[in-house]
Length: 188
Length: 416
Image 1 (cartoon, rainbow over the protein chains, first blue to last red):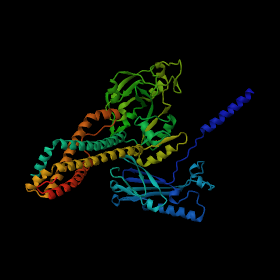
Image 2 (image 1 turned 180 degrees about the horizontal axis):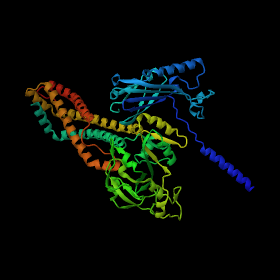
Image 3 (image 1 turned 180 degrees about the vertical axis):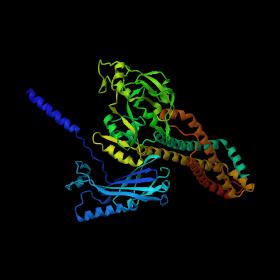
Image 4 (image 1 turned 90 degrees about the horizontal axis):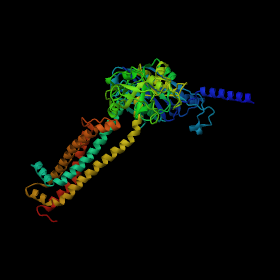
């Protein structure tokens, strides 16, 4: 009897240790809220967008129908030309010297609470459009404002949460379609 | 001539005019002090930390992490292990880091464990470094450096012994291991002033005989033995981090936030501060709204006072007319009157504001840690003044036009 208890106990302990070692975490994902990181170092400025698929193409499941695939491709093509997303003042003399546009497909996960209405989808994904643009600027201090045609380009878009850092320090902005610009005067 | 006449007329009604000027001045002062406190609080907050790129702590909200790590407001949800901290600082993006360990106190002042990097890397007010005003660095295990505020309020000097209490509001002291003040920092106007700084090893040392937040009964390890022990820190509360290039910061931030071994959060101080300010902003706007309403109310009050004096002054106006003043001059006189009252109010309110701030500044600084700038008026204030003078003149048009009709109708004979 004693042994059985010991065995049970040790079994209990092992399962406990196993579950304690496992780390489960899920990235945040909020429809209608895109993230943008802007970093400035010297004469370089980088923009990094992470936008929920729903804000861009209106869905987040894996595109299978020709129609959906075409929508995704069209969106990626739109991202290819950064002027569809944002514009910099021309007197800042910024030249695009690197860009990366991708669709990040996340794995299926358990957190369905917020999307009960979409439960009919066998595969629940949270796809995210990722775009990174890097510029070399002749006169980086002239970037006193950044405008975002993004809101006009993607009609499903909600707001953009912007994290901004330069040698002057870090700050944040919330940009929405009714005032699609940020004021970076004195922040670069 | 017209100016002199107006002045004399105002002087004749000195008490009423003085009361009006005082009322308007008070409301303008209310507006300006709200505005001053608002901007000062914002600068004080933003000036508290500069040149730190990231703050890392246990998984929590960005505002909370900023508040407990930098402002010593509130408590940490969790500590982070030294292993995780080392994993973070070994990333190639990291240029420097300052570990911080919080949780103990001394007479209500927070005790912070850190290393010598803190004195080198912690910057405030656009890049100023903290400096020792008296004494030396943390050379011995039981050395402690205190902020200027702690020294002032507790009347401590270099060499004073000091006992650290366990936790923030507890009855148990680490009295078996007394500290000695080795240095006092110069005033910074930041929460550092109210901090007691010890080494990370000292934090480990005072907890040698403690287990899960309580003293192990009967166990007292002699200080000599503790000094021989391995006191390398096992966990810390947060870390300030500087990166090599700002372009790598978001990559590092993502890496830390997704660190699989431990739930960590990393924040950009400025971003968290903005977030905090958005919350505070609601109250700020409310205060601003109230003070603007008060200004409007006094403007209306001023008009009412001019109005009510009109009847009494119909004789005075008749005399003006008799002296050859046209009805337009009557309008001019009343508007000039409003103009003089508003300019005087502005002068009085500014003087009152600066006097009040001058008197209250040390108290505000000590109590709330907000250093109010009392050197100049903001450009915004000047605009508000101009707007106020303009609206006062416009509002005074109403009684002025009425007086104009009176003077046309009455002529030289007053029919009351």
